[in-house]
Length: 134
Length: 352
Image (cartoon, rainbow over all chains, first blue to last red; front, side, top):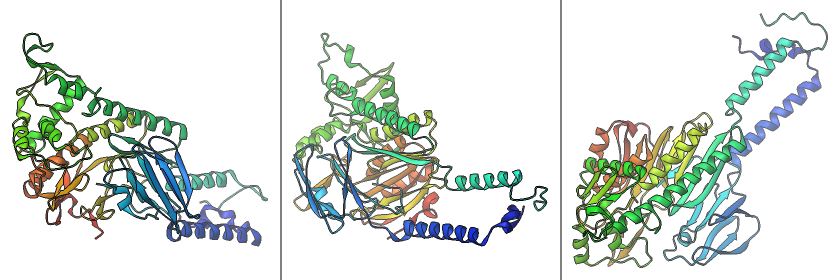
């Protein structure tokens, strides 16, 4: 079977100049977005915060701020600064969440199991791995 | 042969319409059959559980995810040793009862559900495979170490010695849907296998709902069903001593991958590191490995085996992996050296 576009669509030659410009620009826009989506914009845009089995809160990383949450064990303070997120203060005993430090890339997360708090970064750009076994 | 066309003017021929349709379908096919990703995260079994499904229909995907999550919740309610209402808690309580004539249990026989019974049988099989390094009768020792509590400290040596005498999978007798502990004070802790079992059960629910592309991940112990948008799933393996770094990745499909590591729960005392994987023979944390990752056809088996091999040590552990069919693994020994089983050597992509 032929792989030439011309052989599949013999009426391709009937397209006007404007048709061709339209098709060309559509393809150009599509490839540009594809490249941007997959290679350039790897920075997170939003943090998703989940407390217990409650709903997910979305927090934009554009605005610096502090968020106070009530976790399973008590207070958890989250800080958003310069498009990064961290847990500043937590009522858990091992402070694994606080020690995790800043996160800013899609797919990264901070977990506080005692307080049942999960923070993940969402953003355009596909993470290279689907999950980590640990 | 495509060149001829008897229609005239600007009307598009039927053949061309058909060809365009095939073209579109081809594009859809390449881009993953139009399947979309749906996922849900919940705090369950003392960890984070994520179920991810790829499916065309949003309603069907979400329904499957919810049923699957519900199944894991059911298993937690049954298998947890710290939820007082669980079947495991009931067994551990009844195991402590007096065995006189007034006892409700005839000569210490404790009734057990079929589901738990088959899991107990698998646990015993894993104990035999790992020469007793995986052992669900570790419960008395686990109680002494109190890893689920907040005051982590090294227990008294005498207490550990006393606890050790109550550990031993050979001292469980399984008969006619009942179990019996040979020594009083024994008990079971399914912590080394229950997460894997829940993952398998969740996958079974998804399969029943005709899902063929999914991942169930219970705190790093997971199963990946089918492919992800036409490609195998790419899973990272954590670097034991480097927080949030991976040592390498592997691509798998229709497989479970489970890791046991010494970094999940630990504390320092007198400059020494104590972690939560207790050697059932010494009563102290096992120190031959930093982490053991097992890839197998079932998460239940992979979970128990990873724990057992962590205790067994890197040398005997790797020999066991090579001997088992359909099982592969990665072991990081106490020096931090990484070794992969023969089936993974060429497949693992090292990052660091």
